[in-house]
Image 1 (cartoon, rainbow, N blue to C red):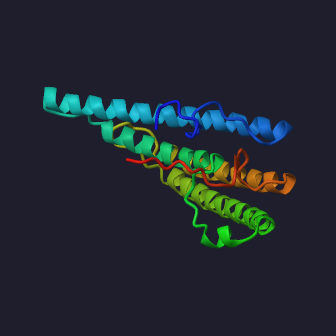
Image 2: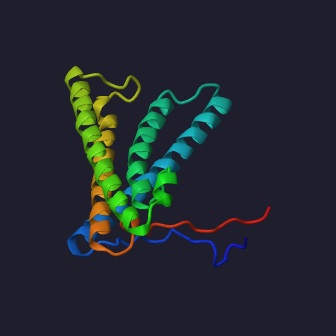
Image 3: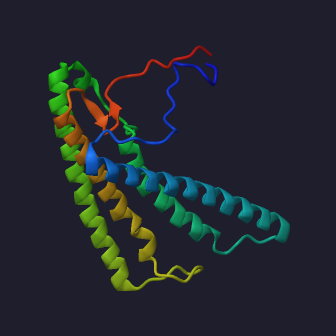
Length: 197
């Protein structure tokens, strides 16, 4: 397929929330923040890894803090990425039963799935917050960078909360619109983007 093929949908542009008013504004602000966090996190991880490899070959010894920085960035990217995936309808779907249900049933099922997933995300947020509190009370520090380890795990409850909010907004979108939505801006359906090799 060519780069400008009309069959290929480009979702790398600016995100526009499908929610009205204040909820849409919040959704767009969170989306922009996530996109920046993911882009910067991936770029910093690549730069850090490349510099560490070069240092290892040129000086015979890598950067002593490189592993800790990559650990921090992996946690950040993982928990910022779950909200991003939910917002763009990119989570794995096992939809054999869902696809067999008529459109009205799909809407009911999607509202239930979104609300249930939202509850699960807030449950995980609660427990990950407890984990961060436990780490805080222990006062452990990262050996190379020297700051408290609980700081790097703050992204877990934040990521779960953002994902929970996103699924809750998806349920609202499905309750207030006639179409079935996978997220606030993605309508349910399959794109036929197969290409011959």
